[in-house]
Structure formats: C-alpha cells, structure tokens
Image (cartoon, rainbow, N blue to C red; front, side, top):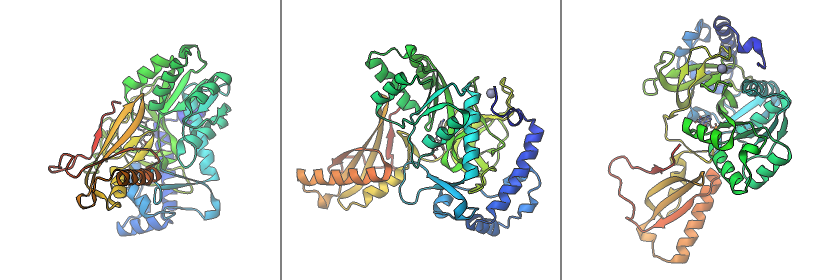
Length: 431
Ligand code: AMP
Ligand code: ZN
C-alpha cells in the first residue's frame, strides 16, 4: 500500500533527475538569503556550475551553529508574509535554531508524514494518539498534520499524564501511538501496574523516535505491548519527523529522496563516503520554500542501505542511528548540550570549577543529576544558604533545558579533579 505510488516507486534514474531539478531551484532560493549569499560569495560558489548531483560536494556544509549565527531569519528565502509557522529545536531558549514554513511547506510536510504512516500500513480507520510534545518541538504538530491528512482520528494527547493517556487509549480505542521509546517503556509498565493486559488493548502500532534506542529496546516494547514498533527519524532543521521512516519490513528507514539529498560523510575529513559505509548523515532539503538548507551536518551516525526493499519503494534506507559525532545528549526527548549546562552553572559566583552531569534511567524515565562544587571562598556551610543556591540553580537550569535536574552541592574538592580532558558527563542509561 502506498500513499503516492508514483513517487515512492520512481526509478532511481528519474529520482536523480528530479533531485537535480529540485536542487537547482533550492540553490536559486538559498542564494537570495543573507546567510548563503555571504557563504557562496566567500567560497566563490557558482551555483550554475552544479551540473550533476555529485557536484553537491563542492558546496559548503551548513552546521547547527550556522543556524544560530543567522538567527532569527538569515536563512529565510521568502517574504515574511508568506511564512505561516515556525518551530524551534527542543531544549534551548533564546538563540535556538528556528525553522520557518510557508503554507506549502506545511502541506508538503504533512504529505510526507502521511506517506510514512501509510508505509507502516496505517489507514483512515486508525485512531492515532500523539504522545509527543506539542509546541515549538516538531514531534507533536508534525505527525498531527500528517495523520489528519491521511484521515485518521487524531488524539492530540501530548506527552505525560500517563493514566489519562491510558484512559484515552481505552475509551477511544487507539490503534497507533506516537511516543518516545523511553516513555513507551514506562507507559507499558504503568498499563500493567493498573491491572490492564496490554495485549488486550486495541493498540497495534507504535511510532518510536526523537531519541536514540537499540533494536533490543524495540523488541522489548513489541513483546511487552504486543504491537509492531516502527522507527521514525527526523530533525527540526529538516522539518521535523517524517524525514525517514520504516515500512512494514522494519529493516531500516526509507529516507525520502524527493525531499532530501542524502550524503554520508567521514565526520573528521568531510569526505563523502560510498553507499553502505558508516558515517555522518548530511542532508540537503530540496523541497522547502521558506528555508531551504544545503548540506546540513546532522551529527547523526548511520549508514545508507542501497539494496532494494521488498516493499517496492525505491528510496534508499538509512540504518538505525548509532550515535552522534558531537556531545549532544537527548534527555527525555530534549536536546541538551553539556556546554549549555556549564554556561548556567558558571554564571553563579557561588559555583566552583568542578561539576558532573549524571544520567540514569529509573522506571524507564530519564533522570539528570548534577553534582556541583561550591566556590571555596563563598562556602560557609550554612544550610539555608545552600538550599537557596540549589533552588536558584534548579530554576535557572529548568528555564534553559526544560527538564528538572536533581542538584547536589558539594564542598570544594569533593569531585575527582580532572586529569586532562574532563569527564563531565556520566551516562548510565542503557539504550
Ligand atoms: P530535534 O531537532 O529536536 O527534533 O532533534 C533531532 C535529533 O533527535 C536528531 O538529530 C537525532 O539525533 C535525534 N533523533 C530523532 N529521531 C531519532 C531516532 N529515530 N533514532 C535516534 N535518534 C533520533
Ligand atoms: Zn520498504
């Protein structure tokens, strides 16, 4: 079953011709933006010299930092009045990475998500309960619009409030859930604790994404819940969810090449690797009006699977994400850079030089624990004072990273002194 058979089963030759045509259009659009205008000038890029898809390697990469530097609209290619929506990458406030969409971009995104859902066997008869965060995060609204376009009944439940989620699932006979893998493990545990048999529920499928997880976790979820779990990959810079999705064969995620030009590079040298080799995923969005992005370094490690899929779709697949090439952590679905935490900590004169971020998974939920040494000259051991500092730190961190860490203040010299490269993050979570 296909959503758009012609495009999903297009021959590789026609697909590549289409990509080249769309790439030219995207390059024309990008070259009008302040950011790319400057970058193309500085790198002496002549977009008319891009005659084949291979020439894309002559174009410079775009990084998350470039998006931050061009905040708020240095990469926007359309007049302000044509923009109908914005989203921002999860986890940051202030100068985060902001993505803009025209009405056509929103429609195209929904179309792509509907395509993903149909690839898993979803139909208008399905009841789709969306347990991803709504708001600036793309996970909620992204799937929402696609599921509605497909014709499912959508329950915009958002994340959290597990008992209410279960109630909704029972009362409205939910058949598909969209959820992070860690929350799904928690959900199934609560279902059991409530005395409900997950196998007797109407849920058939789960779309799992937004954070890395292993094949073993997928199996565990499928067995505990009695459902099929599909891997879903996306990132806000490339719209959000819907970039790559598993079909019913669950053997890697089809990455929709009429929207994205896919490259795998060596993260150290930037060199493009041949199909099948593992490296960093680089994506060029060739189907967005408001904000086309060229050669975006996702920092996600994977490999391309060029072998044909038995489902008949000709778009290549990518393998499960193996990890990242930077130090970005994903905690409860929120992207967190240790440097952000450090910036907050170091704004407090009471804080000393050493700290540690410890991540654990308790009852399948992520927990962050931050150990912070106090500055010796300001440390008087006054309990009330310590409580006050703790609360202020907690508030400042919550405002920045939207998660609630446990803070432990320590006497100066309590943490192991760093020898060479400091080990600031201890991640005890098993995927
Ligand atoms: P955001 O832009 O906030 O949506 O975060 C996007 C990032 O989430 C990606 O670059 C990946 O690192 C991560 N991510 C999303 N989906 C998956 C997935 N299915 N498996 C592993 N990591 C994922
Ligand atoms: Zn397939």
